[in-house]
Length: 616
Image (cartoon, rainbow, N blue to C red; front, side, top):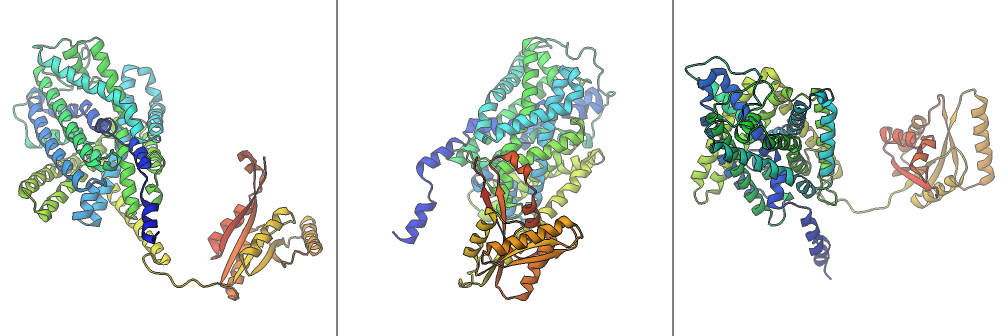
């Protein structure tokens, strides 16, 4: 068999293995459940965000709810069409990062990646806090425990995702279906009603409506548009996670993207129509979605089903981040912008380190915010719009370079999308700057600098390893093996035997404390005497130490040996006992760990650890 055939045989994945891996990937329906929860759940707060802004102009301002929502739906259609093309052009995932890397340069790509990382982390925090906030609204007695409730929900979502993205899709498919059917039921029932079925939900709550106005300014409409665009968060997640879909991944991901856009558009416009039809006003303590459910379904079983489904889906919407961010971190690690540990995958196609990283950072954010949703929402949309804008601009350049059929129309569509998302990003950043958006504006460049620093570090490591070059011919080197000892045991014999097989010369080294302590002096004399009686054929070198330290004196002695240049390589073989049970590690004096830490920090020697296992 030729060498080429051997390489092909060893690198080609067996068909049965590929089938097993494919079972742990997503179908189109599973993609909606695993990667679209963020976008689906946004209908619970997107329309409300529009209403709250327009309420500043009174009842006249609320009349613009539908036009603003239609504008957002148009932008949604542009984004869905764009990301459908992104999926086909970049089947390895990465979304705006992949687009920018190919067409806008590395620094812009890293900006897109940083915006996505911030978006995904904030999505987890906002989704979990929103779900818990809905729960504590129904059960006020739980309000004081909201941080622990947030951490509990986060732990649940993390545990499910550690079992694989397909597993999370199976878990979350039913809540997603219940929520979507509930919203569609609200819209269908509301369209056939001439008046609200009930207003019990809003009764007794103070109105948040300002005094009536006769005009609505452009700035207010832009603020309402930008606020409502929070409903578009999550649209990019499918394009970021194309590799998680079953074969053919591109086709399944595109179908999922279109289905998400259609469902989200219908729900947003339908709810906006009902807001105008029932003349709803924002009130304190009751969400707009709750008022719509009350008006369409009445204050009965349907109303509480919608509330329960909203609580569940808002809490689980964090799953979108767990599907998208680990894939993005894998791409960044592959490009040497993050530690390579993020590129590792477990058996179920799980990027375990990316999942755990997201969980830890999100938990810290939840604790820092005290589980308060309102302190996180102002930060939420900026990163999304930055990523959207970069992706749209990159696709314009993509079409200009491809110059395929109808490239001008596609480029014009993406350019229009870039204009809209760019305006939204500027409006959100400007209006929310003092409410915490300044932190995002600071975090973006800091993350880019971090990516650059990691890349430079890997560059230096690559230069040292001479990556991409043919190494010099292999030649034998004269080697000295140093074995630290402090007593004569079977472990000492095993270490000296191993050292003799590793190097040309072997030295046993013991650190002797020069303190006037009688016990130290007797121990040194006993070791010297026993060594002469044993006669292992290896010289014992005593290294004096004025303080009760082991690592530093040994490291100094190894450096002196290296300065003699009588050997090409110095290896230190540290013998240790491997206990039979984990708890028995606490019984050890950790001398070996201290020595290894000092040698690796202060010397250029090769450090090896020889472990003698203790049987059970």
